[in-house]
Length: 273
Image (cartoon, rainbow, N blue to C red; front, top):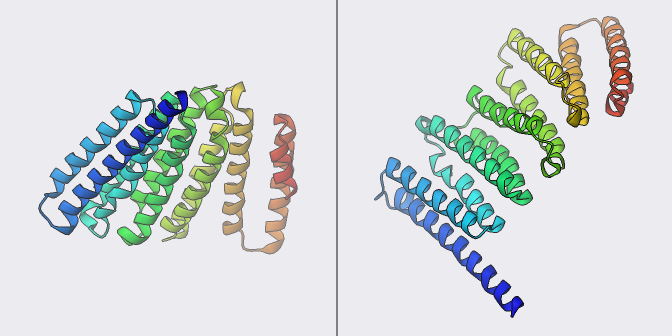
């Protein structure tokens, strides 16, 4: 009997998830294929569908349902792709979905939904920048930056083991995305690149000294990232190979010294490399 009830509940959740997907596809068809639903009405209908999905996931305490809603919410807005006038709408919408999904997943401690919210967001923003609008812009960088520092903010606020098991890979990958996108966006002039490297080095250095004993590993990672930005900056500024060698040796010594003070294995390895 218990197995029957469990199977019945599972089937019900699958049907609910399927109905939401059908709803989203119907709205998509009405707007993109048949042009019978105006753009802003489409946005309202999309928001309504997401709201209903989140409400049902709370009602039935279902991670699967929330994940289905999240995937649909992220990928549906590719109907904005190619319309340069809707670039701002796309990024604002994706950021709002990301924040909502992250907070919902933390509330229910849904690990799968949390990962979908984080990594699907990175993919959709990057894909839209390359394929949809046709360029990686400053707005793309700012959107990824908001996501990255929002995750860092939530991480420093909690000691919950649910979050601590996932934040290090998420923040590390997020910092890599910011570096790659930043290099692409700020490559117009050398001064833009130097400013970008300097600001990021300062930001991560400050984060590495936040007074919080519960996140020592994370602060050590911030320290290594800040030193990496310094390395890139010095590598771009210095032309003479012998000068580079001297500066990089001094930097390695400093990184090693601070790594010993912080008792950071990662910092020690980074200094040797």
